Length: 102
Image (cartoon, rainbow, N blue to C red; front, side):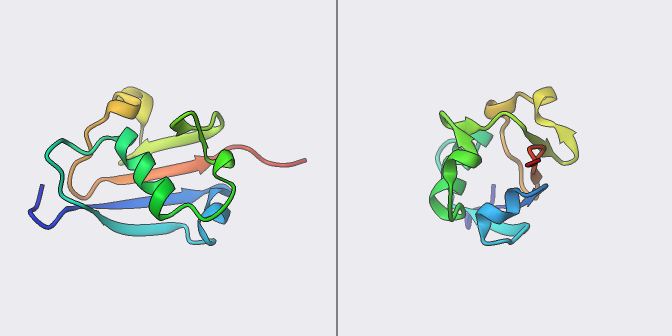
């Protein structure tokens, strides 16, 4: 990780972007830490820094809500360790809502 932080790209789609001021892509630099950044820590950071409204539609019990697909570099996070995945420089992390009204 660079001394200045960890650059990553975070994307929201499928309606999830509506919770983030309708901005679907965020290129961010996570602050330097003594410990690795994980998806678990990233979710807390997103909640505190990017999420603008209705957090209950994005998160549930410090995890993403059921119905939100998480991809890391186009790979399902379930194959990578989910919340414990250690984020690497320039990772692309996508949150895609599969929940739609009817």
